[in-house]
Length: 260
View 1 (tube, rainbow, N blue to C red):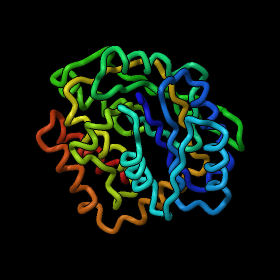
View 2 (view 1 turned 135 degrees about the vertical axis):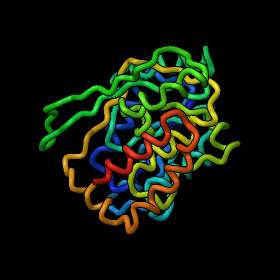
View 3 (view 1 turned 30 degrees about the vertical axis):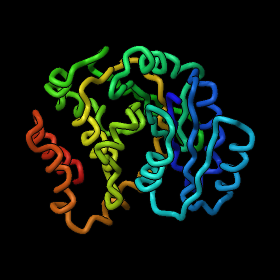
View 4 (view 1 turned 60 degrees about the vertical axis):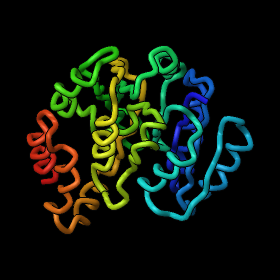
C-alpha cells in the first residue's frame, strides 16, 4: 500500500464525513483512510464505523480519549502505507488535488513531500478569506539544500503544520519519531523538525493542495497557552531539536516570543 491518511477524530460528527469524501475524490490510489476515534461522545465513533462499512478503503480504530498527539501516534502504529499523511477532521482537499503528490511519491520515492496549502477563514460557516502558504522551494532537494534554508522554511510557516507533508512511515518507525504527548501547543512543529532531521531528500511542491479550516474561535489557543506552567521548561524540547541546525537558535527565540 502506498499511502495511509491518518485522521484523529474527536467529537467531529459535523465535519468528518465531508473530509473523508474529499479524500475519496482527491485522486489517490492504493491508499487507506485511517480514522482514529479518540473517545468521542457525540456520535463520531458510530459515524467512523458507518464510513468503514460504506468504503472499503476506510478503516477505523477506537481508543479512550487521550488527545490528538496520542491519536496520531496510534495512527503511525496502525498505518499500512509506505507514506503517512496526517489530516484534520474538518479540513479538505479539492477533487484530484492529491494525484500529483501520488505520482511524485511513486516516481521519486522521497523521504518526505512538502506541499503548499491554504488557510480558509470562516465566519458562521461562510468562507470570507483564503490565505495561501506557499513552499519557497521546488522539486527534489538534497539535505544540504533545504537544511541551509531552514529558517526561510520556518518564516514561511512551512515547518509548523503537519498536514502539509507526506512522510515515509518506515522513517518514523525506525527512528521512533512520535508526537510528544505532553505538548499542547506547537507539537506539530516539533514533530516536523524531528522527522526532517532523518530525511536525506525532500520533494517540495509549490502547488496548494490542502484546505486548512481556520478555527472560528481564536480563544482556544489562548486557553491552551494558559495551561503551560513554565514556558522555559516547555521550550526545552524545541531547543534540543534546533541546537546545531542552521538558524536554530534564532528560530527557538522566535518561537519563545510567539507565545507572548
